[in-house]
Amino acid sequence: MGKNILASFQWMVFILAGTIVTPVSIAFAFHFSQQETAELLQRTLFIMGLTSLLQGYFGHKLPLMEGPAGLWWAVFLTYATISGQAASSVHEILISLEFGLLTAGVIVILLSVLNLIKYVKKLFTPTMTGLYLLLLVVQLSGPFIQGILGVEGGQLNGKVAAGAIATLLLAIILSRLNVAFLRNYSVLISLIFGWLLFYLLGISPQPTASDQVVSLPRVLAWGIPHFNLSIFITSVLISLLLVTNLIASMDVVRQVVDPGKKISLNKAGLMMGISQLLAGLFSSVGGVAISGSAGFIKTTRIKERLPFLIGSLLILLMSFFPGLTGLFAAIPPSVGYATLFVSISSIVGLALQTLRPSILEEGKLTVISLAFMTGAGMLLLPGGVLDALPESVSSLLSNGLVIGVVFGIILEQTISHKQ
Image (cartoon, rainbow, N blue to C red; front, side, top):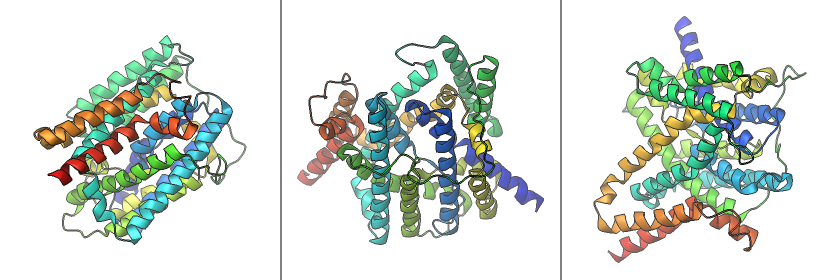
């Protein structure tokens, strides 16, 4: 009994560490108030705790946590940059993102019900996955560097930059240590260090006080969902990539827990679709199975499913207490960016490993080169250069990630058919 309690607490801490930074950084990008940040964090914890339970009990039935998807995180940060600071524009983007999440949920559910998930992998070849990862890092690098340097209104904040860089250096050192515990909990340790450092420097936000002991997350907190062509196309692309991510994460964790375990791909896909629908309904960030769970299991040797389910339940229950979510919402956004910088930058290595076989083939190398330059070029266009175009077209063209990948898929399919 005591062993299960300790194991469940470890799972709770692991899920918490992998969840809290994303909503805080998104809230910062959209200039949310402290109260709005706390409410977004509450809804995110609610979604991740609930969907981890659904997957663990009804879906893949593995000790595999759900966390905010880096794909959705990139989309939120990108459109936060596009929206600027006008309240009307920010609101329109947020309700469009709700629509995008709901769209992704419907697509994944249909793929699962119609038994089409196995065909998705054929479209998203290793070449396209590697291309996507490279463009993802290019897209995220700007917001991350600005966040670490404390850039606001075009001005760098020296005190914030110093604290965030110190936190980043600690995160890098911990991630390279041979001590498994420190390496696997480097994000949490760096987060606590950075938060304390910012508090001592007098630049940490104050926790939000709440007169409610218990509260439920709000439905459609940003408003009624709104259609946006660019976000719709992005959502279709993300839904397909999330499915491939789910398959890869399940394979990794299954090898650690029980290589012979049979998994229902369609049930897992169905739960993922429900997860995206819930994220849209509760105005949060879409989730995904976190393959880092395998590293956690290897380190702690907690292979049983029960502690994972209890840990997920504790996260779900935590979301009902505004005092706790208000406390975590006070994490300085720059600390969040610094603690996750190493994890995001490692995507470059993953992309290069994924692309290694493709680089040896002239046709695929041509596809990668053309698509990457197109996508990166669109990402680096000066702000306002597309304003003369209709809004739906300009918002689509400004998303170089989508443009690059879609162009890459067309090129690759065309070349493969010719061959």
